[in-house]
Image (tube, rainbow, N blue to C red; front, side, top):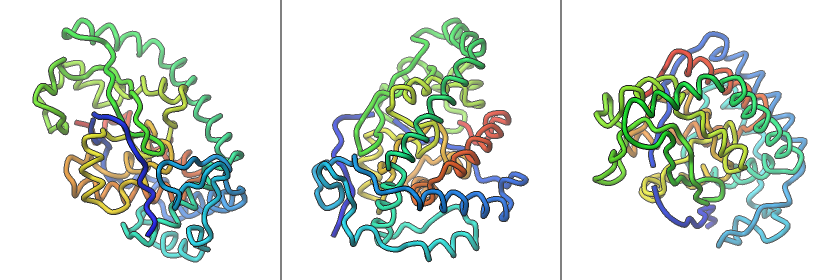
Length: 305
C-alpha cells in the first residue's frame, strides 16, 4: 500500500472558507465544463516532473528523478466523464484515488506548468500589494489604534510536502486569543476585535499572505494551509487528507469559494472533497475561475467568521 503522507516538523492554526453558492455564469455547467476541459487538455500535454524529493517515503516520491511509479500513474482520463457530466466540483474520498492524485500533482509540478503558475503567483501578488497599498496602510493604522498588540500575526501552518512554514496575517483577534490552546473560530467569536470583525468579513486579514506567496511558501490559488495541531488529528480521521499537501497551499482555493467555514471533522471531510478535486483537475483556467469567484466572496463578505 502506498502512502503519500509526508513528515512534518512543529505546530499551530485553523480552517476557514466561505460557502456554497451558485454564482451566475461561474456555476453554469457549460462554463465549468469548458473551463475544466480546456485546463485538462493543457495539463495532459505537460511532461512528468523532475524535482519531487523523497520525504521518508520512497513508494511515492522517488529520489532525484521524481518519476511516478507505473502503478501510481494510471490512465485516468476516462474518469473525467462523471465529473464533467455532473459538474459537482468534488470527488469522493476513496483511497483508490491516491495514485491519480499523485499523478495529477506531478503534472502540475512539471517545470513548464510550475513556472507558469509561479509567474502568475508573483504578478498577482505584486498587483494586490500595489493596488491595495492605501487600504493596507489604513488597516495597519486602525488595528494599532483599536487594540493592544502587533499589527501582523504569525502562525505555523502545514504546506507543500507537509513542511511547516510561518504564515502572515493582519491581527484580527485579541493578543491572548489562544491562551487555552488552539481552537476554531466560532460564530460571533468574542476573541475577534472590532476592526478584526470587518477585515475578516472582507478577507482583508488574508492579504499579507502575498508575502508567503512571494517567498515561495504558498501559491495564490491552492488548498488552504491548516495548522499542524489540526492536521495531525484530521489525518487520522479522514482518508487522503494528507494528499492536500501534494500541491502548494493557497490564499484562496476551490474549497474556499465553494464551501462554508469548516470547524469540525465532518466539515473538514466535506471541504476535502473540493480540495482533492482541485488537485486532480488543476489547470490555469480553473485557477482563473477561482480568482474571479474570490473577488465576489471578498466584495460581499461571504462565509466569514
